[in-house]
Image 1 (cartoon, rainbow, N blue to C red):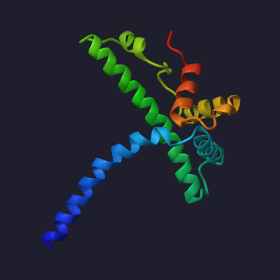
Image 2 (cartoon, rainbow, N blue to C red; image 1 turned 120 degrees about the horizontal axis):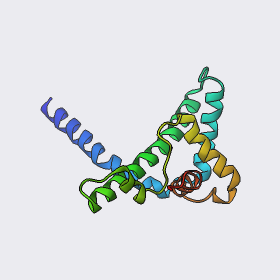
Image 3 (cartoon, rainbow, N blue to C red; image 1 turned 90 degrees about the vertical axis):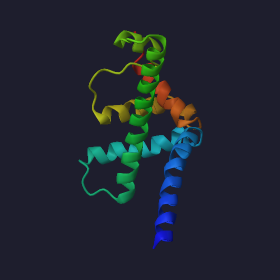
Length: 146
């Protein structure tokens, strides 16, 4: 029984260490076209009122929103970190100086997805680019910091 607990603990620890590595590496391996497909499924699911979703549709909807919101949170953390590094008592204005885009204070989740989808429909040439670069382009184009 002790050996099973040790193996179980080792596998959990290994998983916890590898998840960030795979998440970091995925930025360069997931195309904008792939993300667009999952996000379009998400928009259709929302239009249906989230009823009678297949497991694949539910997964794709969640993946799309999670990817985009995760990117937004990463950018916010980056802006805050840069502001704090440059000034101990950083203000919102200090953070906006370093921000790659500036979103309004409250926005519905569907709007985040729609911004990306609309951008990709206007820029189909980006379908083979990394998804992270197209998400950045979409938000910095629609919500530049002033």
